[in-house]
Structure formats: structure tokens, C-alpha cells
Image 1 (cartoon, rainbow, N blue to C red):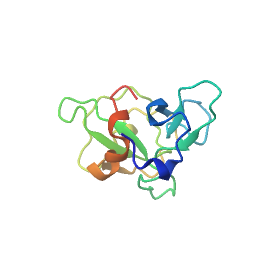
Image 2 (image 1 turned 60 degrees about the vertical axis):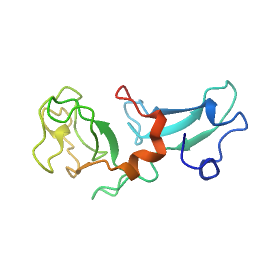
Image 3 (image 1 turned 90 degrees about the vertical axis):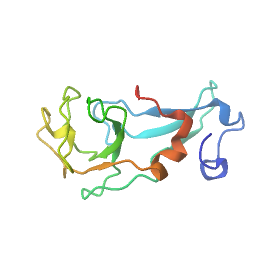
Length: 133
């Protein structure tokens, strides 16, 4: 179940038609942000799903990612939205280090923000989260 329906103004089709997606447009300023949309065609429902995420020192909303390392696999964390991660790193980050900076191809590394997601961050997204996001 999603955080209170009233807070997002869910579509008339009900919450069961809502899905959580990620911005995938390569050059979008919102790349990798999470949002809710409706599965029903012609429904124009849209709401950002990351309004309760922390901001990094770049003053951008952080991006929620899932760790894919042996030590912390499956654990959710936040990183800087301007991170230069190329999606190929598999190193375990040192304490407080952003795993997306290793092997990044983008010269803009952002501020390097890294923090583990806590239950209060994940609860509103509950049934929508899966490691394939």
C-alpha cells in the first residue's frame, strides 16, 4: 500500500492501478527520480514518489538505489543525483563513501552524498520496491 492516498491525490481508478516508475531519459534533470503513474490508458495521473527523500549538499533530491554487492546486497541507499555512476561498479563502498563514484564515466561527480535508506524512507514505497527498479 502507498502512503496516504490523499497526500498523492490518486487517480479515480484507485490505488491498485498505480505503479512506481523511474525517470529513464538520459539527459533529463530528473534522471533516476521515482514517480507514480497510472496503469490505465488515458489516465494522466502523475506524482513524484521521492518527496520525502533527503537532499544532498548539491540541493538536489537524492536518488534511491539498491546495493548489489556481496556484503550489503539488497540494501537500499541514497546517493547524489549528480553522481557520475555508470552502472557497472560492483565494489563495496567504504563507510560513508558513494559507491557510484568508482568507475563513473561522467566527470561531474556531484557532492558524493551516500547514506543508507531507513525504514521511514522506504515505508511509503512499500509494495512498489523491487531490486529491478
